[in-house]
Image 1 (cartoon, helix red, strand yellow):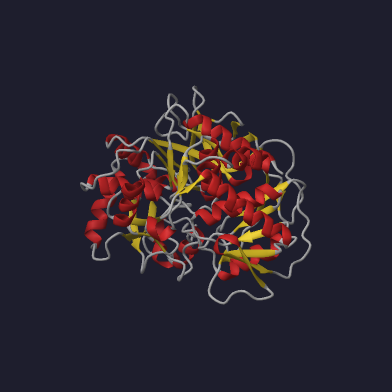
Image 2: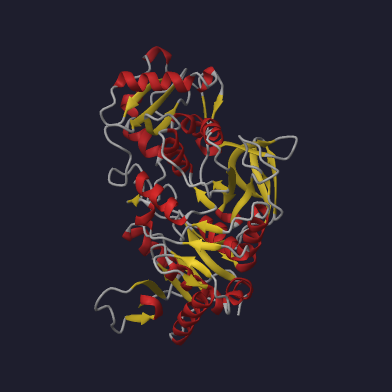
Length: 491
């Protein structure tokens, strides 16, 4: 048995309190029994490397704990992965089986029923070598179709979860609501594992109940109903989820008073949004992490919060910067699938930022996205975009300005009926809070929302920047008189 099994699963064996909240809550002993039954079935099939593609729910947690009990490798696949991405992950990881919820008439020689309504589809697989100690292979969608799998061991997962449980301890949140897919490393480690270590209850409603529609849509009234139903004390939010809650509250919607710890990560949070959240009294704590570092590296926390920063490094990590780029040492992954192990030493994050005199880390953008204006000013487009997206009218934005005298944004409004004059007024409002070199002087109105169908979003909802700029290159060029442009193409 593994260390994670001893620390996460075994304490549940005789626990009769509600621990997993769904339509029919499970107590600790029921969760332990469920995981044990799945572990026995997986062991009987001789499986040691298992992929899953499951909605949020107790089955996901029970399967993950079952694989931890066996010391097996878990390859969690997000439900929003395209069939091509899922097939790539299965093939590149050497998964022996794919576990899903059972459908009627799925019991065949290749589809073996498992306890708790699961079914294992046995796969033809290649013997893919993994770094010793691999417990989890996690995939991110990346900016292209296929991403590398990152191999993590139990020590890394547990160390980060323990740091996070300790960080929230002054507020002692007793109920965590999982609002991100459990297949994402952030919710897996910071939500499930940290909550179990903190002896808290975990609510794991299906994604549809949370309000997700597709890979990037969100039904805000349904999200609010979910929050009021479960009355969580802690949640983890992406910046867009925080923005949705802030806009709802500013419009008069009531948020649950139970919230004590709102962790925000997975993308840059604009300072304007943080000010609005804090003005509403929301207990927001921004953080920062990397998959290669087993998720969270820095976090604002009770007694150590500085808005505008991503917090101080957690005990398991140290952060420093060189030439404007952030480097992280401490907990790290074992390596990437198909590649040699990571070289020793600090991990170059590719993120731009600085560390203030009190040790708070500030992230300003990505090195590979930074552009230089024709006046020689370095500009991080993510910074400008995060400010644009705090405006109630603007839903999507990509900023361009490489070798140009001013910046142009490709924009899609939240309301399709919003006219160009309304968008110009919104830009003027945002520009008032930006220095001159970062202001957006003009815009291109997108023909349609950035989405999977038109190739402008990745499967997990991130904008494919280069694809957007290529699609609208001609329109961007038209926003610059030829005499002022030092280059003929968009960045």
